[in-house]
Image (spheres, rainbow, N blue to C red):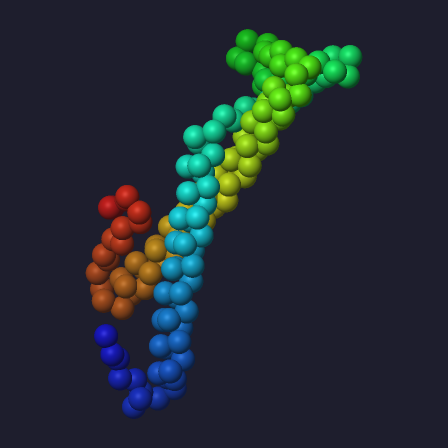
Length: 141
């Protein structure tokens, strides 16, 4: 849509159009970042992830120590001395932490997007005297 502000005092029409373009580019970039994060999360969801710390008995036998449960007990899972089993267990722990960081980043970006959409809805309300809900992803309202 074209808005002619050439004859309106104090408004730089080109600057307004640049701002509009920058807003669109920023939203597109954010959406792209979120899609990339979601793809990484989905890939990690197909692989084993373990929330545990490690403990070596005698410096050789690996145990995974899981978080405390509701009864205050910590499950200890024996992995053993096999290098392949240890490598798989350690990789699952790394994936758990990577997943948690990516999920937090995704959630932060989703919250940012909700704020930006709310700002645009507020601007629409101020300009047009009515509010129109803008859908976010699977949300419609």
